[in-house]
Length: 212
Image (cartoon, rainbow, N blue to C red):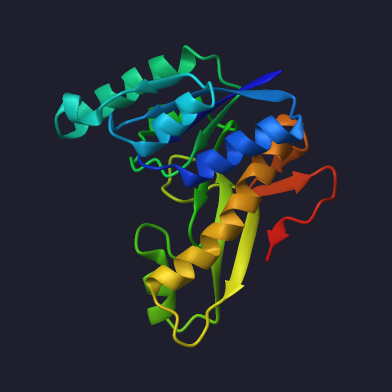
C-alpha cells in the first residue's frame, strides 16, 4: 500500500478529485496526508471531512528571501517525510520549490500545470494562450524537477480555444479535464505503470496519455 501526500495552497479541487478517485477506485494506495502552506486553505476542511490527516507549514512564518525559502522547504520536507510518502502530489501548491526539495523527491513528485508544456510556463497561462492566437490549449501532468514547470510529461489534456473564450471560460473547460487526467496519472504511478527514460515517460499498460 503506497502513501500519497498532497500539497495544496487553496481549495485544491484536483486534490478533491484525487481523494475521491482513490477511495472509489480501490487503488493500492492511501492518501496519507494533505498539507498546505496556508492555514486558511479551504481544501484542508475537505480533507479532514474525508478522514485524511492534515498539516500546515505556514510560509509566512519564515519571512522572505532565499534563506527563508530554504528554511521553509526544509521544514516542509520534514513534515512531508513524517507521512512516509511514496508519491508527493502538487495540487495548486503555489510555491516555487528549491532544488534541494525537488531533488529529495525526484521521480516521485507530480504536478499539473495549466498549459500544454513546454508552452506557457509560469502564470496566466490561459490568457497568454488566447492572446497568442492558439487554436488549442490544455494542461500537463509532469514529474517535478528543479526547473520550474519542466520535467518528464506523464499526460496532457487538450481543448479547442473557442471564439469568444476568455480566461475564465477556457480555464473552466480545462479544469474539468484536469479532474479526470490527474487522478488517472496518480493511479498509473501507484500501480507501477510508469517508467522514465531520459525526458520521456512510458506507460506500461498502453493507456492513452492524451485526454480530450
